[in-house]
Length: 157
Image 1 (spheres, rainbow, N blue to C red):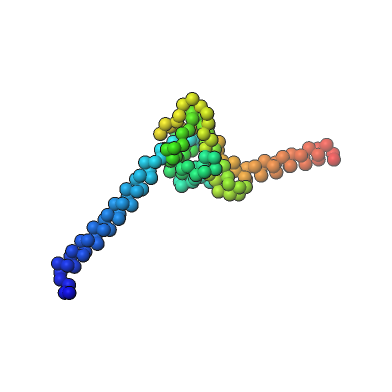
Image 2: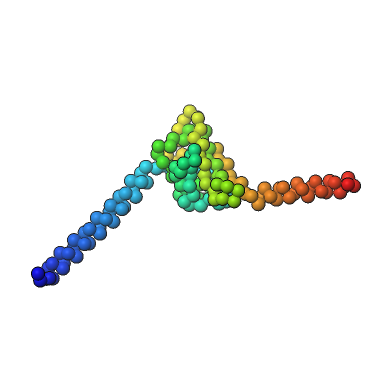
């Protein structure tokens, strides 16, 4: 069989078409994943250890992720999360920043709540607890120890 220019062009068009279909299929599958989620916000005084991509969990199961962080006009950190649509958060739900372990990575723990209303897409979780900073806790422990030593020295012991 002799390879002609027409055959080379036909094979090239077929390969290009297959690649275009594969790319379109990937794009459509990522769109469908995004449509299975909705966005909510929560406001915090500190979000140390939280970044875009941080996991959002409910009952110990990953149900979403952080998609953006910004400062509002009051200099509070506003975290936008994408949550699986099957998760319905009640009006008294909470979104707390917690650590996996003492020095582990941070994640956002959702407590579903039991309020009367459901938080809709684009809504806000009003009960949000900021990240605990280990260094701040250690500073408080050291300050308490220093105060105890100072009291003993002042008492003459």
